[in-house]
Image (cartoon, rainbow, N blue to C red; front, side):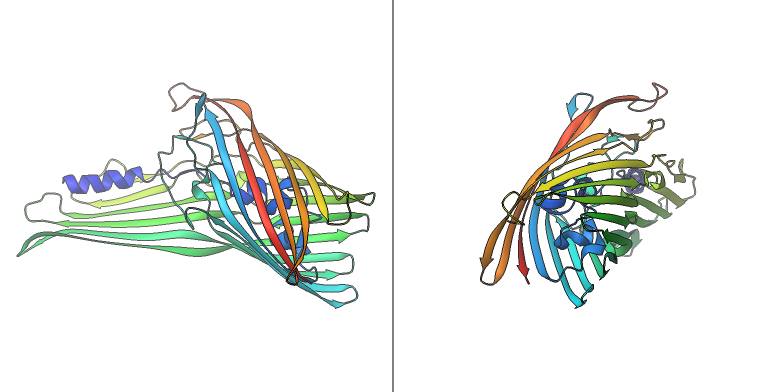
Length: 425
């Protein structure tokens, strides 16, 4: 009875899944150039980062490969206390290959990957009422890979592809029985990481001194489906029988986004960029997993099913602006700066769940240097710094009896990114 009770109680606690958390790319961008321009370069992406920034710009003739690293320091506060979150860190790798098929036709493809430092994928659980910075908690940071194809037809470029990420499925079987040799216990756990794909698409119009860009990224989430079967058959035990527990939920949710961008050439050495991102947060799933139990022990459990309501987030529109200057000639040295404003999708916290969030201001700086040709390879290095600052916000629930009815949130996240790129033309 004690063992069976522990199994049921332990699995019931696991129904409280960590709320959705955005990926590093969604928050900051991919690669030092995109990060330093605060993701305003939708219409003027670097070709090696095109698979993330805008798939339609992966056609540029030549071959390029970039390897970089990002590290973010989280300093978020809840009710005046520092929240313990793991820092955001990972390796980024990009590759692009393209060629001309005619005077106004080019075809190419690109692949980018983000590989977190600590694990390829991580699923964690905690009580659903606990306050969580769902856009910044890196627990759901996971390995992703974007692969795209692009075609240029004169002034028009189009690109399509997909982002591959992992989901988790598992089965646990536990048996407590008795035979001629006495009681025995046996257990087996099988967990698999399945692969899911979300669609990517981009379009760019090159109008000479001005460019227009459009990007679409589908929603994604780490789907979790865990089933447990516990069987007890011991002589004289009144609680012999079978307990079935299934936990189903979605974690690490990133909303579908549509980005509209523009870029202008200013004089001979400058580019001004801007973009608007629409994020469909209203489709976000419930912040905790659903639980279902089927207990056949001659009694009825107090909880057969449990689930949380949809979070009711609102869609957001985020403006970005950036500038890139090349004062000593084309691509020799590039100086960059950017700003982005990201409204919070949280309306008002009303129920048991306690999503912590606030609108953010993002300030970015960066630079790139052409290091010349080494052993037939054109080498370039880039670096970026971005600072996301949360507006101080108070979240009060309509009732002191609700958990964490009063919350004050603030803080910042600082991110550093460096990369080295090699080009073969």
